Length: 287
Image (tube, rainbow, N blue to C red; front, side, top):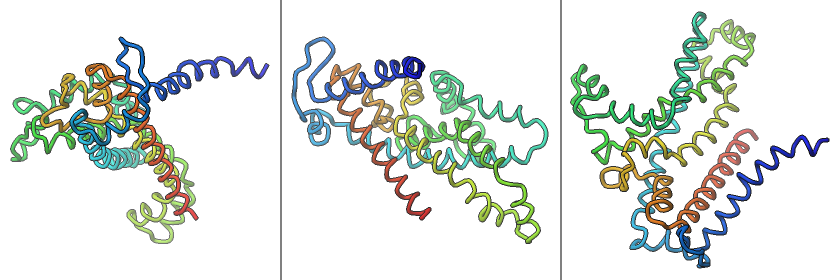
């Protein structure tokens, strides 16, 4: 009976997750373009991605763009989410309405989000430049200035922080009221309570969100693709060419499916190593 109950989930895992992953691993060692039989090339795809600048001139550019995006987007997402959670935790009426409004961007389609933000960033009549003009700051060409492309993309991630906000809010609700009351009785101010009580109690949630947000940032694709309208270069001077966008282009525009599979397993390895490092650092901090 037990095996019958887990059979659907196990079948889904094998057919839609395990088998495609193993197939992609195999094809990463081949030269394959979907139209011709795969030819075994060993580690050539991995070697060429790292070292052959002539064949893959933008591989390291995509790595740099994704790394910078991760460094900017992850802290921004977590800070904004924590600020929203703290605000909601103080509200006594209308909490459910505000939660819904703040969570709506998460359930919005990435294509719609990309289109909306492309208009918001428009240099001529975009809302963001209009708001900057109200305070005397000149408008910026956000998506055509190579220096501003990645910060502009990171700003979108801060807008879509509803999941992180909900997790932080749950963590705040789980802090015993007695601890807060004791801190107030002891004369601790708001900042002292936040630093010495709230932050330590939210450490498990912060660690979880750090891991998941880093993984999400390393895999960013949909919004970037839509914002640049599927541009092959990923914006001016490849400033928005994220790693997964580059992987997509290899697979479906350059007909280099073998190289794309190799890129996917390079990304998998990086995510695995980063996650393991985060677990180790947290374990050392706990000990």
